[in-house]
Length: 471
Image 1 (tube, rainbow, N blue to C red):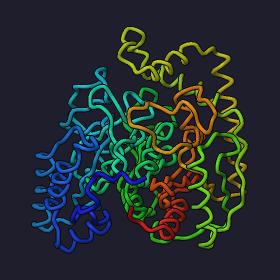
Image 2 (image 1 turned 180 degrees about the vertical axis):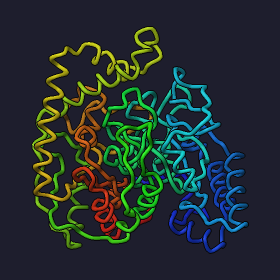
Image 3 (image 1 turned 30 degrees about the horizontal axis):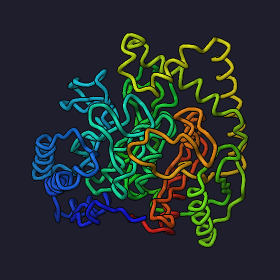
Image 4 (image 1 turned 120 degrees about the vertical axis):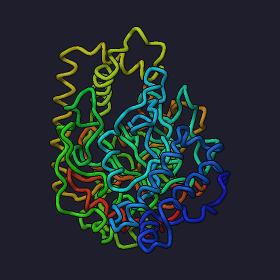
């Protein structure tokens, strides 16, 4: 298959990595206005084909670039990100820019302040170029009633995945250097895999989150997306830190994730599983994953076939998702039922029908799963599995109804391979690993115990060395 319709990267300075672009700005070979103008030109030239950035703030971005340049001209040092253009997922507030959530229920609000994650990125020198498209009210595929579907930049007849599909597509199309996303069941990692970029779901609390209906939740996280692992680590450095509004956030340790990415290394205790001994996985994913693992072995990475005991996890996920969606959207339910997608309405309805015993059982089972996973990670530093159970599917298909001949019961069955790590609070990183025989991006999901981001980044950087950093 070869359906690349976005001009094969002739994107000028946007072909640079974020790290390279920052180096050029610090040497005064480029300016923030240069990179912002390049991003605007690229979006205008390519976005009609993919629909990644439907909400744009170009004038504000140019003004922010000029302010950075004025401060540098009077001797202020450059902030960490030096004015690099950033795409922000459109369920997250940027001061002065409308937030839609991709739904008529939430559209039209123009916030006065940016959410904590974005505010920190802006203080560290990121310049928001626009809001990226997303799934409507938390679905698993990037399409919504306001802006339509985001297409895969490499195969425009296919989906970019979701729900952070706009950010992933914008990165893959070289529209921006960095992409913001957030993740419940795989919303960072699935589109990263489909679009051939990197995405990290961090340990809950590492990155301060936007205000949530349930501030005690540990499933929703904010995270970085980028084209290379050093860029991903750079953005993570610019995102982390305590914010009083997020009670699980914490002060940043005196470490640099960039330093971890700069030390590519195989770790010694690596497990590998193509299906977690549990899930249906499409043949194309199995074959691409197998070839990638063989290449890592030839490159010196020793692995053992193993997976933690995750039996019963789909039922736990469905119950806890239903409960969380009811808590988040209950104020609109059932009076606005017709405004919800069938999938999200189904989640809310499922939560509404849970008994106290159902909820208690799901919580107890989740605790047992966590203990078994932590026992597993006492023996292994990292687990490698596929990032997705299916390859990108047609853009007008909302979700795969079967996987490898097995019928799907719900629309979240196809993202279970990412969702399990969300429920367990484990950091998980989607790293590109070449292409399959049809030209589709192959993505490896590397998972570790909580607070193992440095190890994951170092390991992912070694994978990137093996396959090459650029798509």
